[in-house]
Image (tube, rainbow, N blue to C red; front, side, top):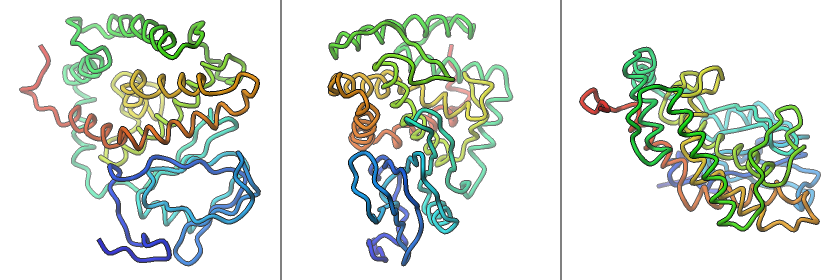
Length: 294
């Protein structure tokens, strides 16, 4: 592959399966100079003040923290190369997304809409996702029953993984208005969930599905992204969060978010999470009628 530009990547269209996770930026300006994405920062999280070239074509998405501005040229360049851009609030808990441009064709979006609009097919999709999350196909076709079973399994998963990582677990607690007003394991889960959600948003966009049409989640404008992110809660979000808690010195809780981001980025690369998510979405949306669950 011939790659032009100062970083050798100006015209590259690297598949997400071959990219390297995410990058966190804060307190600076993201712009374009000489065809290269550049971040000028006052310094953050131990990164010295200065100007940094960003290899945007070989990462799946950027997380932009507080104090960050973005130029029109930067948005255009990232959109052209299908690199996700997510603006996150203080401590990385609240998330706002500016995704790449829409896909070139609508075939899978139309298929997605057809499944969502047909009651029988939609229920099949729900049961398929719960089967992936639970590790088995549950006979019940009642969504309320499936949610109850999954909720009970989730509590046990939290307990088992906490014991595995050797941390104290007192239950899942999340205050949307005060996300930092909880213990370290719950804060870590919030941070890891942001990374997992961002990966899911990139995957959903990459295959051309419709974020608003969730099968399990319903009210959110990003319902399908949440559906996909939840498929990887047990294998990605919780382990990353609990490993971070185990690694952080309790006397330095301010390093928790940074630790979660580093671990999440490494795991995104190692597991090729976005590629796995893309395959799951295709399997779900492209399932034929003869694949209907019993």
